[in-house]
Picture 1 (spheres, rainbow, N blue to C red):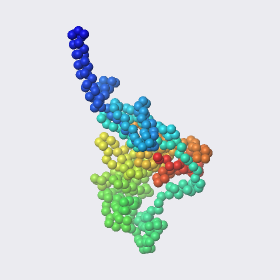
Picture 2: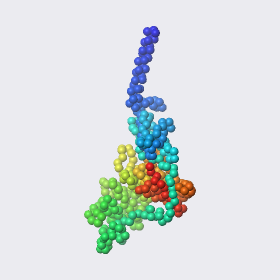
Picture 3: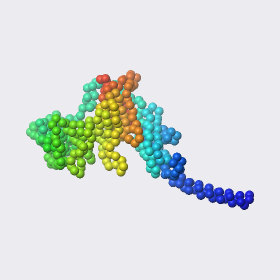
Picture 4: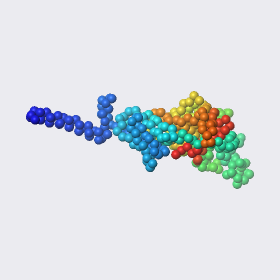
Length: 378
């Protein structure tokens, strides 16, 4: 080999070394070349945790992983920043699919994914309407408002040992609405001030200092949560501002609101919308409120399945929905005809629902027929 050829080869190897070495170093540090935008970028990752076990997790249609018997999670690294898709599937279960953005040097987490069995194990329940009303019946309150005063309620089991004088003596006067929470009575007075006392109506303190105008023939209800106090004035929802000690408008049209089992989240809804509200402070840039559903059909009632999924009914369907609003929101629709355990078909029309938080089963009343599911959570 001639000296000139050797020199050219040597210089070429040096040049190749100088080009490849930085790339290998950057590659080992998690950097990649974004050929689409012609630049070097830091990669991110996707972490998924799914129930039940032994599911297939497919990233962007080509990266496939499976969870095992003892591990319900999959971690995929070195993904370019930008839009990515995740498909999670298992035979006999509804697929889960989500599109979202992966950021540089960040791991995007899907930690609370549930695949729901396509067979809900529906069975007919005898008794139908009457039993369904019993399921939805609210516990008997210990207190009752009579002629604007708060009394012990005679029919409440807790009041069985009270004397006639105690039952006939008002605990608090000039009461518009009340709520028993955290071993205290919260009440809205006719003066428009929210106050609280102990369970005997003593040791009173004012919670709000700025009065609201009490409207006649308007229903008021109070909801007390760990960090927030809400006042429902007809369909208007107000929230107590801790700083000003006054009620401020929260949303103009609300049918009901319900707290998640962990006490960190709230859903509030009307005939066509379901909103999610986070009770705790979120990272900077994230909103405490999110719209989960905007439906043309009338939404009747919403229940929490667990801390990450809700169930609700519309005009002719029952819907199970995740609350993770990043990208698309995964939903399962129970509508049309469902197959019962005895192989009989049952039509779903104008369903009314109830969810049993203890047994993890839900009930559907349709055409005066009551059916119940098996345990729907893994």
